[in-house]
Image (cartoon, rainbow, N blue to C red; front, side, top):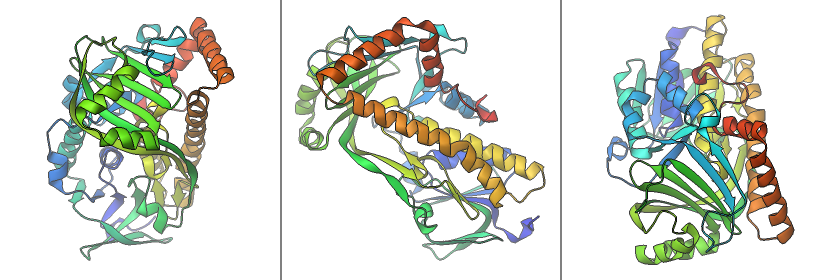
Length: 409
């Protein structure tokens, strides 16, 4: 076994967004020392204003946050999702098409399928937990300019000139992962020609904890409940149309949104900022290399159509914690190919399957072909009429299917 005294920490994590800090907390709980290298200055994370960004956390992800000691810090600001309605339609028809899927949390025993949580609350909880954990060193405002990994150790060089060594290097640094690129890990995928418009919307009527996924020819519109009479929208449009809409003032933007949103929640108003994100599929050709692993968007960037991007990344986190903890318990070198290979074997197939499923769903629904429209409407109607199949999809949406890591059980 390698000499632990020769390393600055057991694991160095590059990336201070959501996955990196969550991974650091899980590893610290397992007894490892961790360094998190975070390109963002501390002040960026500490901003407490409402900016409209939020996440759909599946039940399995909520369990992970609970095991990490975070859920108690954010639960009061989270909105349970009691129902999900998936419907098909064109702009102007409103989100309640006669052909739809209806998922109700009452059909499973575990409780709500998930919760909506604003970015500002989750980031603040992660940051506070990082600062309180003595096994974690959080280096904010630092970037990696070079790395090397060999049979003995992983080493990174920071822009400040500082060098750090570890037993394992983890890239949690997003779709343009420098960690993966420096390791020579290529990516495969394609651009969807779509852009997601993201904002928070205030409305007059209560949402009752119901999430809506409304399919239009240009792309899906998700309307996701937040606390109070506020919902988050993820509105996918063709890239050119989205650019035109983003260039409008708030009143003009709402004029474009209203016929797509419908009036089932009464009048709507913008709350906070608007964001836009180009949509593409991006998969790393492998999730591991010599003494290196990739998690979250650094490993897989998915279409947001099912809201599973962050949830898939958190499952990576839980799986890697378990693999490294079990390797350590067996007296193995946690950076050895056999140990990291178990993480790759566990997560690569699942995430590739999820990526292909979301890709196929987007292609099937993001068009107005009459035959495709008839096929998907009949399919949704059949699924909705078959309780066992419907319950299976509810459990899938809650993140309860497949080989769950211990932290999500």
